[in-house]
Length: 371
Ligand code: UD1
Image (cartoon, helix red, strand yellow):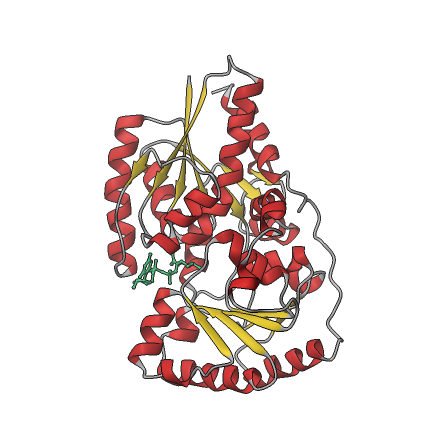
């Protein structure tokens, strides 16, 4: 018997592990004698219903086999708590492989714990680099890639980055994008969402906003500038803004919440199906997220990214993403171009075809049988 544990922790992890879990299930159905067991560990980094449970339900993930319940805290506290609890799981379960995805604190905490227990690690979404070490995620990416045995890459820039950092070729696998696997799989359901009706919206007559990066939302001046910017846009375009808990807390703390006027619809964070339906029918998305840059590129929706760098350059090079930096005027210019019908036309990147998870499972299964 071979045992694999996949880790989920924060909101963007669920849509990446769901298709991997489905691919393992499919493999077992097709190979009933294979004796490969796939379990899921939820660290509890995100714990609200609308940051976690709703995704487990909508993405048809089973109840996690292990729940570590670590919750919020400083980076050191959160990472350390995950490591302490995850080590107990590993010592009990003795898995052959741990799979981590993305770049959140749960990713580095669990990969580091596994490697120190002598357990192999596979990192899905490896090799992405923003080259901005002030981002906590960049540190998580670099460290996780340095200690992983299998590095599954979603876009070609990742291969070059890993090679430059001295990762041997035989550890690198260009498989495509598991987040897009979820998107492709759930498109029929997404198209049936009632989210537009519920918010009285008409297709392409509104923009979507998401913000949660500490660099954008943790400082009063910065957040205040962004709020002014949103107010300006909302004069000519309705905005829908599902607010991340970190952002909500700061808007409240800095006294900015009441400035978001009636043409900006503020909502709780949304579930996966409704959120993607909202994006798919929007005129543009204004965001500082990582994954949304990819989802908009796949859907052909213009995306203005309020960051100085992106670890997903393919979305700018061939997709629909604009990197606006921190200059609000630049972002304003892009929105104006889009509203005037001059948005750039994107292409879907190589291997973003809904089958990345199946490729990953095939590679893992082939490897694991020889251990
Ligand atoms: C984390 C990830 C980030 C990812 C984001 C997606 C790291 C370093 N950051 O950032 O890469 O893009 O998730 O959302 O791992 N909170 C709640 N309820 C929750 C979760 C969080 O209220 O269910 C609040 C807490 O006040 C918490 C704050 O949000 O302190 C931030 O949560 P945290 O997990 O530390 O980081 P995120 O900003 O969500």
